[in-house]
Image 1 (cartoon, rainbow, N blue to C red):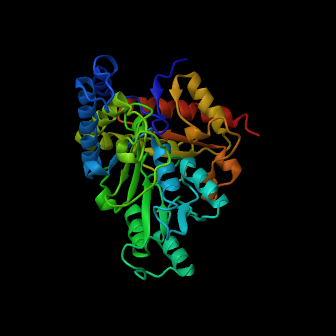
Image 2: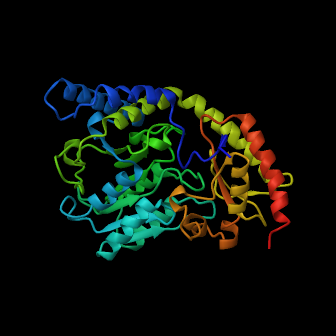
Image 3: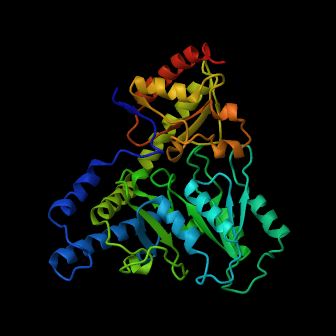
Length: 391
């Protein structure tokens, strides 16, 4: 059955029709290479620059701090892998959390194998990375607050703004302030935050920030990397020197235009979409944690709800809902097909049994209260059925 009710927006969002309309001319008529020294090239370059301004406005940054990538994974890898080496010769430590997306954890593993110091901080039972945990680690490892020369970079801290499995919002501003006070730069993966909360890179005090277009009602295959002005970072994709030398390769013009339009729409309509998402989130949480479902929430998400249903296999529940035309997830879309339990829920202290009985419901701007009621009705009925088969 085709999916008629979609509650897996943390995996990918439905592109806005206005995004398609903005992209179409750059698929048909304005197909020039933005490096070309002729009219079609100039048109493409103008469109890329306009999208860069829209992205900068969306993140409250400057246009020359915006770089276009293929998505959140490339943005995260660019920061993690591009931070080490000649650009930052004094850097000797990267600190992150055990609940990051694999696009942070996997490059950290690679660096660790090559002798770079890596520390992962565990969350509390609610999935929150406590600022005190970061400060305690820095103190215990002989880093002194404000005990470094101005401009000296000791390392990097990377903590996501919103967790992709639980929706828990991290205290990024406090973490960034602590990192800076000990001579560390700060990166945040904001992929699951974009379009769901206001993002101001200056207020967050971030040096690097990653965004992905397809989580923002834009196209797949394009993203934003914010790099604070004046901070050097080495490229790991080499070629013609596009994106001011950081990311070579002919620009994905129609994708960039679509992402720019998605940023404009999100900037203009954020307040109303956030209000709708939170209202639906509150309804689903109240409905599913009470009554016959007796679910409990993993984490503190508002528009991403990770719910544990005792004596219900999460995969079976998701498949049964799919048969009824309703789409939800059992975890991160990047883990589909992999025989492994959620590293996020494990880090929060949940047993494998509980993790395998937990689902993710992620709400987007196109969801309605009627759809939420239908989802809750189906889950109530199906959990009762599935519990009778649970061993």
